[in-house]
Length: 304
Image 1 (cartoon, rainbow, N blue to C red):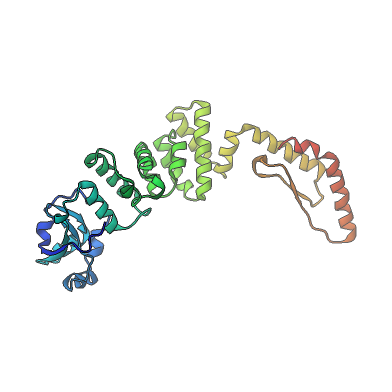
Image 2: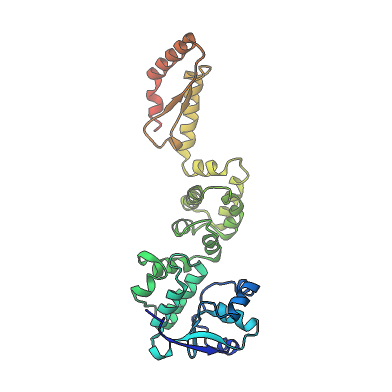
């Protein structure tokens, strides 16, 4: 919606701030605008013009607030009142002015979502929704986000987890998540997803209540590698596979200098070997041992 040609007027910032704030849903640190550079721009009228509609500030709360703070008596604004826009059209203008599609914080998306529910009966056109989040995901994603407890919302805001992971681990109790947070921050994003999913599945499988879930999390965090402990706890057969593999190595390859490597969690269809040799004679010994490995390898292929 083109608003460039709309009426430009001068308004008193203090009075403008007494107007309706229903469109004030963008999370902006107003204090960032109360600096010398902004003061000079405001005095010289070299700033993005706030958009108003008589009783509403549509966009530019941070600019109006900064102008009021430094005591400006008047401020250039665009008044779109003559357009007689609907509430949804005013929202469209605000989003066009903000121009941050796919870059809104969760707090901002939640504010916009609540606005749409309250002022538009939960319905907004694609023209509006696609200015917030592309691919038509806005309503569903914020609705899902709002269904989570505060601790999980906080994890999402901090980019510790995404919505998909949050959905998978919503049964982990609050005190358990709080206990896990420092350790989660040491992991990659994908490994956070894996350990939380594993813990969630263990809680389901063992029918753990909140108290027992917390105790389980507390115990695995005492281990040197909680990530691996959680994997083995979810897949007990993995512990057996690891033990059999280690026994095989100690019998078949001990002292050979050959390193036999299994695929992660024995999920795959192949093993790999690594070795080095110092002489032709040494290489011959390694080849002999590899031949012996060939004879015996059927028992480790059963582990995959």
